Length: 104
Image (cartoon, rainbow, N blue to C red):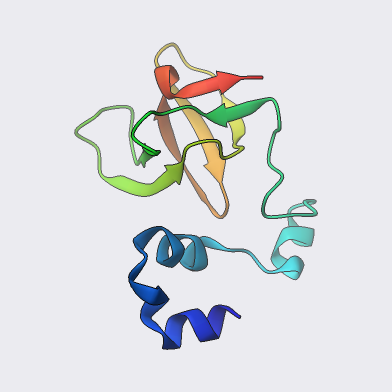
């Protein structure tokens, strides 16, 4: 299916392209002890009225954007810092401002 999306240029949907580029195969997930791309830490989700939030390479709004995480997506929290939390989403790790993270 991923190959079909690529051939169709992701149907022009940027979020679909981003998801496909960061999707992990079952074997990749198993190597990290995970079972699903969709089930990170269910206690923490992205909460952003814009529909997504930026994961950044560093603890600053001036740091490069690693990936845009969709509103409602579960994330793995690696470390809770004061303002910028170190998180994992799909294959990527980076920093998300604490104001964009909701604990369920």
